[in-house]
Length: 306
Image (tube, rainbow, N blue to C red; front, side):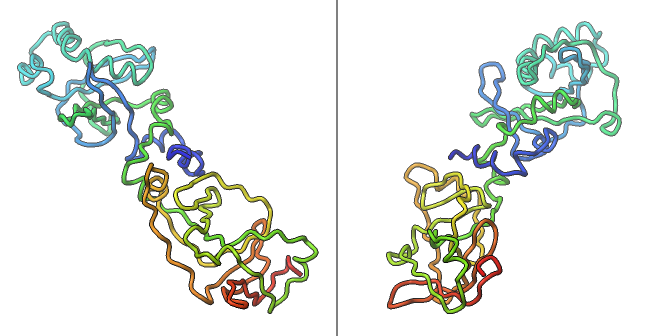
């Protein structure tokens, strides 16, 4: 699996609204500012003093706020006196110097951009804005701008594919995992006779526990560096009763080429175990030994096993 596939399988991300995705600090859209490869991110510095422009994206009105920037030298030179410059001249200067930025916004929105005119001043409360940083890949200083939001823009930008799986907020997310010791091919007639004192040999543990499978969030099967989708096949399984936590970053790192997979802590003798099937607990017990062989020693049997 790929990191993006893992993220798409998690309900909280698969079912996230465009607004939720846009609000994530991991949101990043690849783009180009002229010839520079960049990424757009939301947040960062909120410029107070901006040149506010009325624009249209297709037919939808928006207000674009451009702050003072050395990237626009002629605009920068008259910034303090821009209120004295006639609007047609100021707009012509914006089209000349800010053309790459306008083209970036048009491409990102996938809607034709039209510069309409100057917008009246308004506070953040009166005119909510998306604050955007355009970050060049080479590490140059980001270019900031603001844009009033809309439902169409949220749909165009709020997509799961634009969530950066390398972002710390994504890598730090933790999922619950259950260590699986064995899958038992046992007919229903035998399941119904399970009783306290019974023991099931666990040959999978005879050669050590390093490659035991982890079932993560009921969605993924993890064994060493292999991460794949997991589906319950309905067979009885012996699992550790104590759950573990694994981060998305750990999952992603396991899938990397030549990944060094950290060894898990081995289960100790008398560790609490369960036999489960289809979400039901069939029996509980502990890890023990029968004639030096690892075994599941059953202490109690659940209703489904009776």
